[in-house]
Image (tube, rainbow, N blue to C red):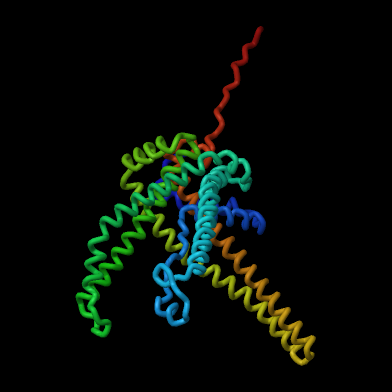
Length: 350
């Protein structure tokens, strides 16, 4: 396929997303949405909330002898168990999400909903991919920390001792500076996620090379087209904002569409049964509980479908941008025409 710019890849990505979701099937849409959401979760890291927020004096006043800064032994054991559970849950989600990142690329490239072949094919690469992501994130974290450590310390020292002083120009400037630092940190991690997922992983999936070769190929691609890659990252950021707003509006519209009929049904049930004694009251509560469950399931299904469509578009957008730069991928996204076979010349034996 021909090489597409970051803006030219938008339209074919939309068309491919529509083709994957058409004709509409709720089961297929939910399946693709869950796969896409798991793949997106593979880019995130869940950390359990550790910390002691209970003052030491509270334990002393209640007559409980505390250990380790106010924590009782039983509380410490409970927190340790919760921490282990959160860690195992986060590790499980990280594994399945990372493996689904391979699957999602294959599904969009081959325009299919069959998960098993891709799931089996990319299994051995999952743990190396997880290790590369964690190592890359730690490296980015170390670099970002080294850059922002002094500005953050300067901001903390500039905070006045008392909180009663009105903000002045310096305080507002420091706040804006802190906001810029936070934005820089978020953008740094977003770029790390996008660079690994969008420029390294496709070479592994479609060219079948090692991760070391994939890093080299990605660096070569970025070095040859720095302007095009920067435009891609910019468009990815703009598209993320635009699709997030559109998705929120769709979900809000779905909330209204689902709430109105269910609310009318609930109101009708109340009008019919609120004078029916104990039996009527019981049926009202049961009906309201069922309607709440139906509404919750409806909103979850809508959220999965909408988020899945958005994430499928993101993946298609990436693959179309890279399709003209990775030949094997380009042949999948836009198969080349079959070769023209010329017929053998006819010779008249006479």
